[in-house]
Length: 138
Image (cartoon, rainbow, N blue to C red; front, side, top):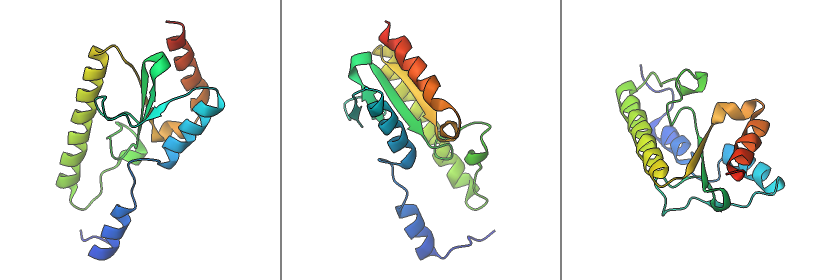
């Protein structure tokens, strides 16, 4: 099946996809700040360069796009019908990188919270606050 867009249009569309300051990330950051949590962004010294780092709680937050990180069983993680093999390899690499980063962070005694893009459409705020409050009690 051929792509529905020209090469130039597809290239432009892909160039507009950001890895930082995404809408889901901004939503979580705004929520955290409003609730008194202070954080650092995209700390390069930590494995996986977490989206949000809460040093006080020794906690990192990854905000994963369901498609890009292969959220299993999620309707937003469907593979494209064109270049399926290439996309599958890319997403598998992303998943492997995520697992390596999480293992390294756990080995360094960091708490890890992963928020999926699709979870931000439900009642995620109370769940996140409860997790952070649990870490605060440690």
